[in-house]
Length: 491
Image 1 (tube, rainbow, N blue to C red):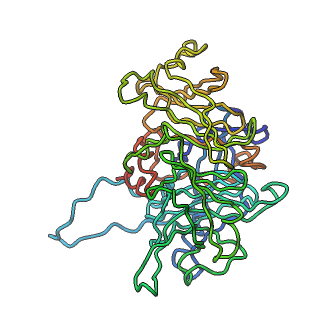
Image 2: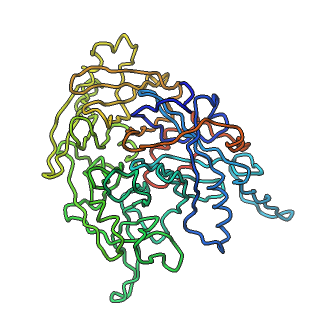
Image 3: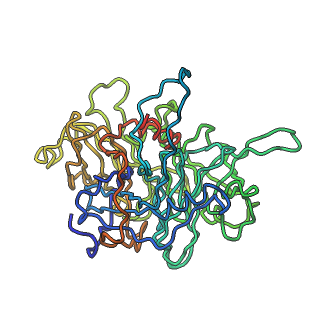
């Protein structure tokens, strides 16, 4: 890819959700560009807090780099830390002679400065990119890059009194305004959770459904609980038909609504204006629409990570604004042939709550499409489907060639035509479904500049974490806590 400093950006990208953080990530700096940042914020710590200088230094010493590619190629992000952002490691513990010392597992080699954090793209839209980041010392947080304000903010995770009802994945939201989000500056991360409070009448602690927002809305009254957390909590009212075990696999905003999609059961949503109103005592009313009956699944919590390998849901602007759901079926319990599986696309009518099946293709028929053999694509089951947000009916997915090579393929489900294909990697063990982003809408006015030595922090000297060494287990762990996944990878 040519240098991006002065070139026209692609209108649509497939963004790799694993953020590269090792110094070998940016091998050809001409292919990368720095995401402009003029402001840095650290929420959750006041200047008197011992964590404040550490977190403030970390966020100010971060630089986000981007390598944008035309689909079906993957676009990527990378984080580079300056020396000023590094937090010295504590000296190793010492024990007196003869002391009983528990066995210590193999750990990464210690470094005098911070290793780059394990970072993962959670969601993007409204000119915002929300990431989860975990540092070597256990500090975990959300990072938010704001295209409008050209700022990078560090936001702590929810307090321990909160149980995430849907998922740890935050949804970045902006209030509606004429002229598009480029005319708005304030935003909030939104997470649906259960917050534990003491009920004076019952005389015990109880959980209540809440919508958590950070930063809190500018006009909201204080809800920081004496400075313990910067999160604002608003009562959430869920419909009676919403399943108790709902889990938000996908989050997105569309048409003035915020969505949390359970890819096994249905979609939960509310009005963005209700979520972002300033008053804490304004309860947020949610609606729920179940998936098509034939797509309902009863699966264990441990298997939820596999859902995004065979299902997806997002908004599509092309051909009329709509919400699409894609399911790659298992072909039925009586069939062992992979070609018997079907790729099915559904469209949701939000006003009526009805799903319309608007396209279907058997996997066996996919293998017979014109150009499939010429592109030397493997006759494998499609995985990690991604909807094109600009073109109705266009779907990208991956094909894995018997653990040898990984391909990204684009297909028009309506015309049943292959549009493009590309070999991605020879390391298919770290498959994580990418995000499909409409840059002209989701990240309008994204400002990139050429990488200059004097403006980019020095490459880190810590232990590199190679993308190809991240196991596929990562996608299985994302529904719990990314830092638990990080502990799994490092341990």
